Length: 329
Ligand SMILES: Cc1ncc(C[n+]2csc(CCOP(=O)(O)OP(=O)(O)O)c2C)c(N)n1
Ligand code: SF4
Image 1 (cartoon, protein in one colour):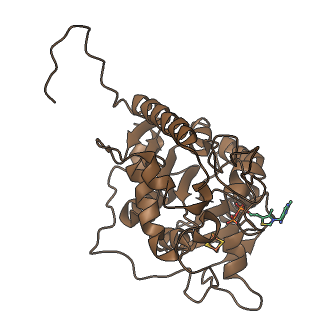
Image 2 (spheres, rainbow, N blue to C red):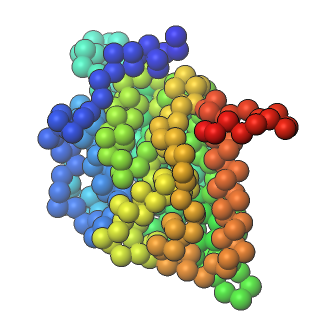
C-alpha cells in the first residue's frame, strides 16, 4: 500500500450533515460578486480547519482578502511574491520540523502547510518553485485556483487560458481567434512528480472539493489540488450563473474531476453522456467570437483529452473485435 492509501484508509468524508461551521477565511473580503475563486478558497479552508499556516502568492485572492490594515484571514497567513508560494510554504514546513526536533514546539498537533496561487502564479511564474517543492517531498498542500487568466492585473492570458478565449493579451479579431495555445495540464505535471496525492476539483461539487482538500491535508508528503475557479469578471458572464458554468465544464468534459492517489488515476465522475462543448462555450462572452469550425476543433480536443484520461484511469473499454455483435449496452 502506498503512503497516501495508508493515510487515507480510514478516511471519513464530509457529508451534508457534518460540514464544519468553522470559517478560517471570513466573510467581508472584497472579491467581485459571483467570484467562484473565493468560494473555492473558503471551502478548502473549511475542510482544513484552523490548524494551518497559509502562504499566498500575489493575485486576486491576496488582494481581496488583505487590504491593509484589514484582513479576512483568521489563521496565520503570509503574503509572498507572485512566484514563490510553494518555496515559502516548504520553508515554513522545514522550519517547523526543526523547531519540533529541538523541542521548541510540540509536534503533536498536525499543522497543515498550505500554499496557493492563481493559474498565473502556478502554471507560469511559480511552476519552478512548485516543481522544486514537490520534488523535495515537503509535507505541504498546494492549491491552484485556476481562473484561466491573470485576472488581478486585468485579464491577461496565461498558459492555463483555454484555446480560443478572449483576454486582453489574446484579443480576437480578423487575424486572431483569441488564445492560440491549448491549456497547460498542470495536474498531470504535478502527478508526473510521483507525489502521493493529486486531484482536480470544482466548487460546483463542494463536498467532493472539501473531501479532496481534506485528503490532501491528511497524506504525508506533497499534495496538489487544482480547482476550477470560475471568474465572471474575466469570463464575461452574468454573476448569477457562475456555478452553472462550473457544472457545465464538468458535464461537457472540459474540466473532468479525478484523483491520482499513489500514482493511481481515479475518475471522480464518469459522465457517460457528456454534453456538447458548445453548451459550455456559449455561456461566456470570452468565447462569443468563435466560429463553428473552431468550436469543432475544441470539441475534438476535449474528446481526445477525455479518452486519454479514461485510459489513464483504466476506464477505457476494449473496442469490440471487427464483425462482433453489438452488446446492447
Ligand atoms: C514577478 C511579478 N510579476 C508580475 C507581477 C504582477 N502581478 C501581480 S498579480 C498578477 C496576476 C495574477 O494572476 P493569477 O496568478 O492567475 O491569479 P488571479 O489574479 O487570476 O487570481 C500579476 C501579473 C508581480 N506581482 N510579480
Ligand atoms: S476578477 Fe475574477 S477571480 Fe478576481 S475577484 Fe473578481 S471574480 Fe474573483
